[in-house]
Image 1 (cartoon, rainbow, N blue to C red):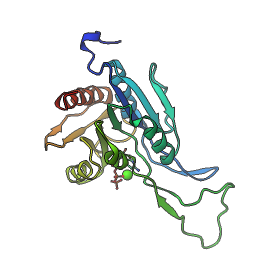
Image 2 (spheres, rainbow, N blue to C red; image 1 turned 180 degrees about the vertical axis):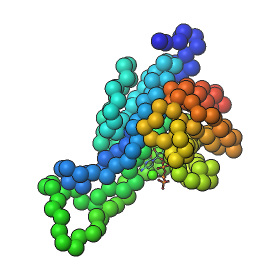
Image 3 (cartoon, rainbow, N blue to C red; image 1 turned 45 degrees about the vertical axis):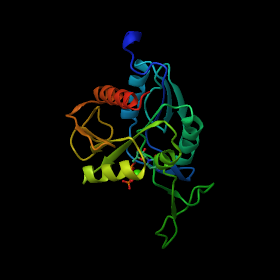
Length: 226
Ligand code: CTP
Ligand code: CA
């Protein structure tokens, strides 16, 4: 359902969201990826839409139906995600980078299936572009929200990412905690803001987390006078 237009928090705003994993091809039958299900990002996209935003969802390969009324751009690799995000960045008021982007890709993508050989042990990798970092360098007045999925030292790593990537907020979780990992329908997150504010939320459904993140986004926009 849609809330009354008078109470729709993101009316007239464009929200760019990335979700899911990326896949970095080794050859036609193999790739490097991760366990991201895309559920958190899709839930945020649905909620932003429900709050009246124009939503652009750049999605890696996931097993989720495209939400109605949302512009979904399907990508596979980090490089494709980077290009799709940059294309929409200028028009975005808010960017929410939920995607679990692969940090490395094979240096060579082979056209044919690679055959194993005696003594081969190495796959040569190179770094992908850090999309959030690039956006942090380019941002004019976009509100920039990053995610951090950690297994330890969550607060420390989240604060470092906030700083390094010039983000306005980092939503962090410990993926080793029961109920907060990849693929679950619930999440346990802590929000780190630039003014030092830390918001620690209890376990909630991913749609409830999405609702509260969008509320937070709205108040950050207000603080920025937008
Ligand atoms: N991110 C990105 N592009 C990348 C890697 C990460 O845009 N190539 C974004 C993610 O979408 C997320 C944030 O950066 O919003 C943090 O991602 P994370 O993987 O936790 O951080 P990294 O900087 O990659 O550091 P590390 O994986 O070493 O913890
Ligand atoms: Ca990473």
